[in-house]
Amino acid sequence: MSELQISLLGIGAAVIVVVYLYNFWLQRQYQRRYGDTFKKHEDALYHDISSEHLETLMEESEPVHKPSVEKARITAPDKACNLLDEMSDYIVEIFPIGLVNADALEPLWERRFDFGKNVNACGQNVTTGNWEKVIADSHVTYSAFKLGLQLANRSGAVTAARLSDFRDLAREIAAHLQAETTIPEVEQAAARALQLDTFCAEVDQMIGINLLPNGGITLGANEVAQVAQQHGMKLQADGAFHLLDSRGYTLYSLCNVESTPFQHHTFNHMRVKGLTLLLDVPRVEKPVQQFDEMVGLARDLSAALGASLVDDHRVVLGEVSIAQIRAQVAAIDARMQLGDIQPGSARARRLFE
Image 1: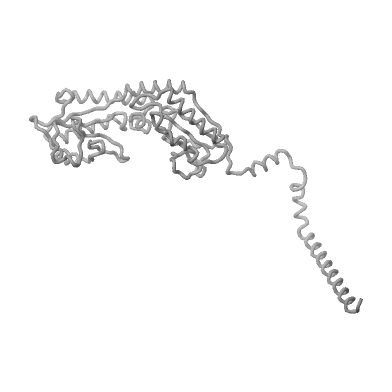
Image 2 (image 1 turned 90 degrees about the vertical axis):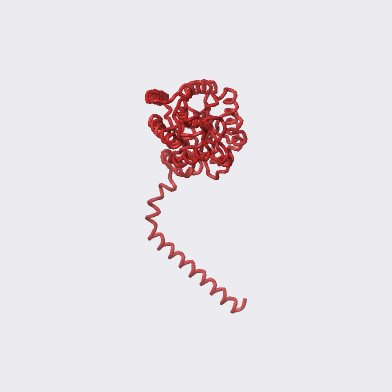
């Protein structure tokens, strides 16, 4: 081995020794500075953890994006979607094992018109925690669903067969989602539907005041439209003029005393023998007050059109007759209140449609 090689080996060995000594010195300094800190947490990190502490750590480490079924039920807010309620709907609750979107209800969207009554779906929004209406193209993520089939409306009560079909569809959706469900008994729901329909039929009344032109003449549609518009009424798709409240709901409607509807393109040549001003009692708030205001409107319209107020038998409506009708409206209002159906409420508007 040459002298050059021996010299290079010696230099390399010296460098290694120097690096080793420097690292040893750094390690001692590090231990002196931070050793006490590590010792303070040694037991928590490496020694046995109590079962209680272990459960706490496991709960804290549970992914927040996978709420359990029980959590979905417990954290559900009191304010639920007003499309559904226990009195007027057959409601199935679905609690998926994971988070889902509106696509999970595709079978419901495909068959929603098969049951003869309104079908609605509400979902618990994962972000807000609120229950809200679910629509087919929604991109919101949900932790739970409520699917509802309305028990009754003005066409009658839902049948047990339709309720069974709806229940089976809800079960299919739940099975696909591997979800837990709360499903009411069909027989009990069918009985409730009949009771609800019977009650609604007893209070379902529409009060009409007829306006017949004096002297047996007819009224031009253009004239009727002008007077109606002066009193805030607008022609709607059903061929009647409607006075709407601040929310867009009808207070009163003014229609042809005969069956022919008003239409914009027939105003110039259409003539009518009389008009009927209608109050749909179950669908308006404070129906007695609304009746009083309707009488005032009827008098204003009759004065502008040269008409008289008469009943269905063409007998002039005097104060006594108006008072009797008012008492009838008050009785309907009271009966609905006792039946827990507030006139003009969302529940009433759904049941009386």
